[in-house]
Amino acid sequence: MHVTVAQVYELEEALLLRSVLEAEGIEVFLPNEYTMQNTPHFLYANEGIRVQVRPEDEARAREILQAPSQGSTPDES
Image (cartoon, rainbow, N blue to C red; front, top):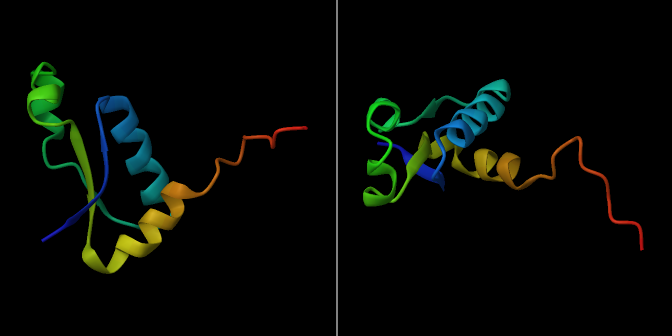
């Protein structure tokens, strides 16, 4: 069984999140990836693409996904 750590409506975004997590050594599952590639109109009917990981990787995956991107710059006030 896997847990959902993100849900997105663009296949490209799901693939990017998978790349980020896999770079950190976390195995990622996109259970409806191929369906969305072939029938993208199902994205909204199925509530998007689920990005899933193993339960033991959930906390680390959420931490990684919530971290600011390396290329971002802080607001200068």
